[in-house]
Length: 285
View 1 (cartoon, rainbow, N blue to C red):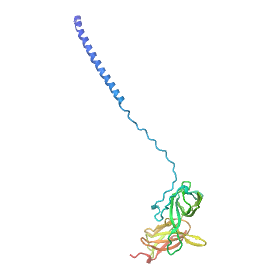
View 2 (cartoon, one colour):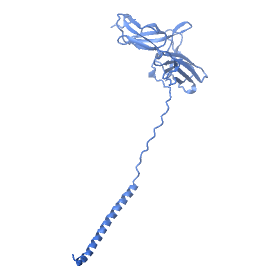
View 3 (cartoon, one colour):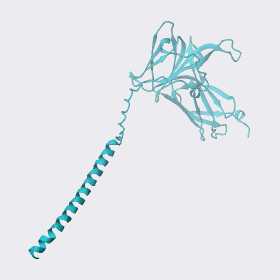
View 4 (tube, helix red, strand yellow):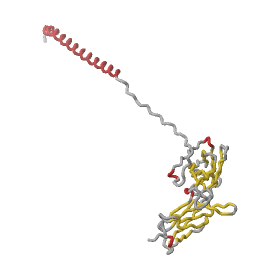
């Protein structure tokens, strides 16, 4: 290309470069403007809220609480109607076995009142029991029960030990009454219920009520129905009564749906019993 031709085309080339520069500048301005707009919109958006973790409440120390007695636990004994608080006084119980505390021993406390109507022609009023409290001892074998002054029967039982019934008095004006109960190894009473033919007799209910002795005389101890020991013979006529303490008991035998059929006295401990019910006591088939 001649020098004159180059000189002739130079203005055209410069014009193209100017146009290209303008276009590129416009594109850059558009891009920068869009970025600024996006930043501005982002700044105007609300900051998302992030939930802070909720701290778990601290675990409370386990506190031994007195259970509120319910009718299902003691269907035969009505509940004590009056409410009781610590200001009425405390019954402090300690349960031991072989000198060691017994944890989780089950305790029932019954209030004794002489308002039950005499039965069976007796003129002496019988104790009218009211279930005052049910609870369990702690790991240290101790238990505190709010109680009002009065006469009580305390029933204490623990697995593997004999049941203990203890009369307890809460004197007037005494803020705290201390009671210590010692448990001994349980005894059992087992045997079979039979017909006169020697065939096993099943579904016989056996109920034990303890005898007590005072002034050289044996007498049947009046206890709430829940504190009687009972069992039912199985299809082979076998039965087992556990949690017993040594002593004399009245044994009642009942057949399903019938009143008392027979009663006898038994000593504990005893060899295995064979209890034969006379045919006249059995329901006719």
